[in-house]
Every structure is written in structure tokens, then in C-alpha cells.
Amino acid sequence: PCACALQWQTSHEARAQVNRPRLDSGSSVEISKTETLANLGQLSQRVYDQILSVEQWPMQIVPSSSFFDIGRFPRSSDNITRLCTESDTVIFVSHRWWDDHCPDNAAGEKYARVCKGVKRIMSKHSLDASQVAIWCDWACISQDDPTELRLGIDSLIAYAARSDYILIPVASDPVSVQNFRIAENPIALNNYGERAWCRLEVYMFMCVSEVRQRPPRCYGFGPIDCEGFLGRKPRERLLPLYTSSTKDIAFDLDRLPSMGELTVEADRSIIQDTEENMRNFYVHRAILEQRLKLETNVRRRKCRLSGKQVRCIDIHLLAETIFLDAEMASRVAYLHLDSNLIGPAGTKILMDEVVCNPIAQSLTMLDLSKNPGLGKEGVSYIAEGLTR
Image 1 (cartoon, helix red, strand yellow):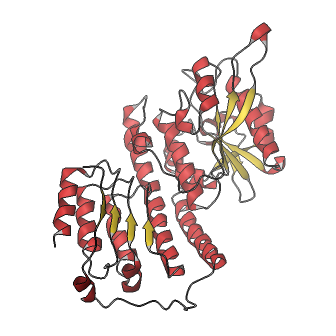
Image 2 (cartoon, rainbow, N blue to C red; image 1 turned 90 degrees about the horizontal axis):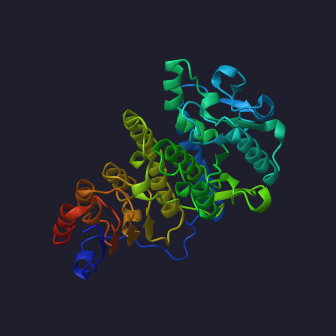
Image 3 (tube, one colour; image 1 turned 30 degrees about the vertical axis):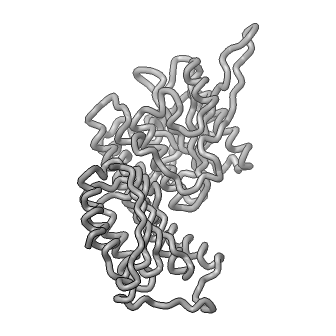
């Protein structure tokens, strides 16, 4: 029942009952690609501003020079942070603790690896060292004031939005090295990708990257081989974990942050709330983007929301944003809603407000495949709707 891609043909008689707006093929209504990109940029900026509005505690960063000079993984009590500014190029360090009681091990391997990784990013992207700043939770969110700690955690979405790169330090054990060498995304990393908090940080960064129309610059840094013959030092590499060409990021629904492993199970509700909040921004922007593309291209007939984490509660927004406009709704022939989070309740709304909407007479293909929550009940709503 979860695999559901439907096609149908409306009768000529049914089509004739609706006054379908006609498009003039010689019309100059269609907006240029340059104007469309400008409009998308304005939309992205508006959503970005909304994301920043959830910041409850000002973002603190560590200047790269201060991070390099301190000689160990810094803590908030070291007081080497300052407020983040618009001119900062921020590298967000996402990591798992390598010791039971502190982020680094006794040898300081993580600190050394982060320093090298930051320098590799600076070199690769020709960054001005004086403008490079580092964000890491242990140093930039108070570890001693419970109120500041809570507000900082609640501001993680905004912190991810203000960051330009994400760096994941990789450990030296054989399993971590092997996984890192073949990893194509952060979830594939050992002792990282299965963890809920780590997933959340990457998830927020990747969502924001798409919202802001920027390349998802996520890197891992660590060894790609273990200590070799005659004690040869392992080779270390900075590897992209999402390529710069990645677009329309689709998340494996089984590997969302809220499905990850936790040491403290009580943290799951915090992660779920943060994930949902981020998803609200992400889905809203995705729907608005589809409307904008339909508005600026009068020949466009597809509404593509594949893998955009659309939920039942988002179907009303989809209907109101696209399918209440008679001219726009009459053009949409293909509606792609595969690989989302739509269940029976959302399917019923979809059939009532979109598929069976008289002005959506051109709609002949609906893709609801890979919606795990659809089930038999959802399919029954589809069947009932198609008999109307």
C-alpha cells in the first residue's frame, strides 16, 4: 500500500464542465530565468530571516586564531568566544565525544584534527583567516548556566543558518577509517551517523543550505588508512560528504534525527521539536518555490515536491498556495509527492481539496509512493476519491 503512483484520464464531458483558462502561446507573461532566480533569492532571504528569528541566545563563536592558540579543545569557561557578526565565515564543528567525560581524548587527537580540518577548508576555499570563526557546542554554549544552555540548544537552527561550513572530525579506529574512506554522506560515518544529536546538526545545516540556495559544504576530516608498514603515519584527507552539485536534498525517512540513538532518552523530545521546527521552514519554502516556478513559467505543468518531508498538516498549505488559483491549478498535470511523510489524514485532504477540486481538471498523475505512513486507509481514501 505504500507504493502508490496513479494515473487517470478525465472524460471530455467532465473537462467541458469547467471553464479552463486558455494560454496564449505568444504571451509575454513568462518571466525570464534571471527574474525567476531573483524572485527565488528574495523568497530564500525571507525564509532565512524567519529562521534567524528563532534565535533565543546570541550566537557565540571562537575566532580561528584563538582556537589554534589555546592548544586544546576549548570549553565555554575558557571565555575565548565573542558574538558572531555578519562578516564572519563560520565553520560549524559537529562531533561525537571521544571520551566519557569530555569531547576529546587524553591525547588531544580531536583538537588536532579539527585544527587541521579548519586549515584545509581555509586553503581549499581561499578564506581570509582573520574572518574565519569556529562554532562548537562545548565552547560556544554555556556548560555551567542551565538557562543559557537551554536557550543555546533552542537556538541551534539559527546557529546552523549562520554557519557557512560544517566539519566533522573522524576518529582513527579501523572501523571509523574504513567507513570514512567510502562515505558519501555523514550518516555513513561510524560512531556519528547513528547518533540523534549528530544527525540533527547535519540535518539543520543541509535544510538551511537548500533554503538559502547555497552549496551544502559539509566535510569530514580524518585518516583514510591506519598506521602502515614501519610505522608510516596514516594519510589524512578533507572529504566532501555532500558534493557541491547536490540539489533538492532528500532525507532517508528512516534516518531522520528523531530516529537516531541517544544516551539520554529524555533528549528525544527536544530533538523532535527542533526537527519539526526546521521542517516547518523547509516545507513552507519548498511549496512556495513550486508556486513561484508555476507563476513564472506559464508552460510548466509539474508540481514537484518529491522528498520534501511534506506531512499531513502541510496539505492544506499546498492546496491553498497552488490549487485555489484557477489559472495555476488548471495547468498542473503532474503532482509528485513521493518520499514524504503523508499519512491517511493528509491523503483525505489531498483528495478533497486537490484531486477532486473541479479547477484541477488537468491533473492526471499523482505520485504518493514511498510514503511509509500511507497504509491501507490512505489507499482507501484515494480509491473513494477517484470514484466521485
